[in-house]
Length: 330
Figure 1 (tube, rainbow, N blue to C red):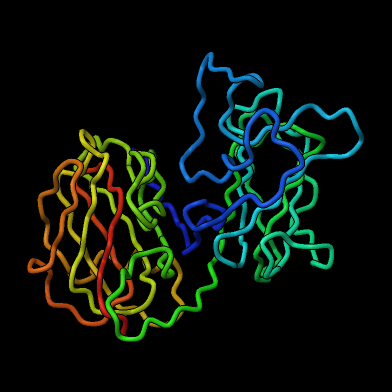
Figure 2 (spheres, rainbow, N blue to C red):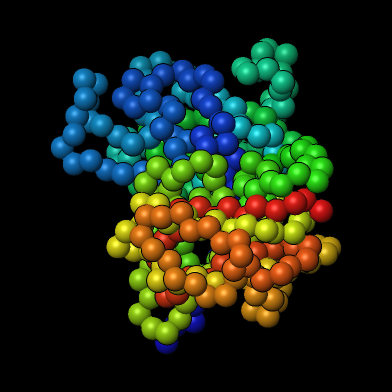
């Protein structure tokens, strides 16, 4: 039997996702497919035989064929400033029409669209791309950036760009009750054992999920295992209400779930956090879940003190749209 490999997310989120307020503020061209699709948080899809007035419908950004010596590019304003650790330039379903090469620049600007005085720095040199592929690159420059420039050479299509990093959060919560597991407040995913159908970070997103792709969903379990996800709260606090939202998950919601929690001080590796989490105290005993529903747990929560990490266990598998843990910041 193959050993299951855990997925270490290391507290990084996609800074480019539109749910954070990220926007395309400039593009040289978008003849075949609009640039705004490149930052959609859900995975790209292919629609066989679907055409619009410009040609084949593609889920991403696609420019026309260049007949000059220059290249195409777009400028993305990040919803929140942050440090960039790695990127994924995804050419899924672009086969024969992907760019030959790509590169990335970045800057910090208080303006919506950086002007000629903005200082752009190169964060990724020209890299070759393949059709229908994910291209992962580590970024060494750990400055705080607000804008990213994606250059494609000379033209073509990119399905998605994911910019994984750390958001710069300047919020002061005081003693008010907040959603400790909201990405907008600074919550981040640490690790999970599976995210086959839906990315773990989706569970922290603001608002209602748009569809099943806008949630955390694991593959079907074929044994006695269960699935789990570890989150770091936006700040330490005492939780007095938890909401597990299974909207859109109707034939694939978990049968049950339980929640563990802990307060961990100092810098700890994701691997050590995973190992320690098995012994964390229960915050919510195993409870029954239902399809397409918000489940509110308040009186059932076990009395807790200050915590800053949460582990969600789902039995045996399935999908959750959102988790919202309300508490008073400590």
